[in-house]
Length: 104
Figure 1: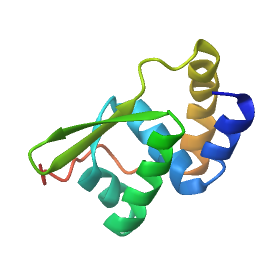
Figure 2: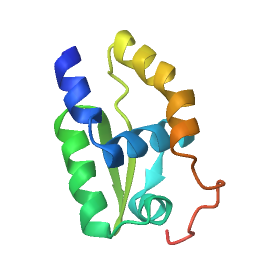
Figure 3: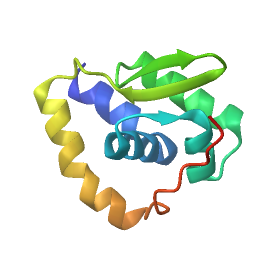
């Protein structure tokens, strides 16, 4: 991954929020992200697919549920960028309290 690719992946507000939320919790189900973002499932799924394509997220399927986590093979510099973004993103886009939807 190059710096340009990372910036393109995170340039969308929804994708940035998804990455920060997944980073905060380690792993999240699609339904938790839909609830958090207040966006339709197809929209969230499209953004998740883009984040997988650019190598930021991995998916784990369990029956009908899909759980997303950060790719463990991210370069150190990408991890450092994400860490540096966490606080300012949380301030600009406050996340709901941790209340998982319980859908899965």
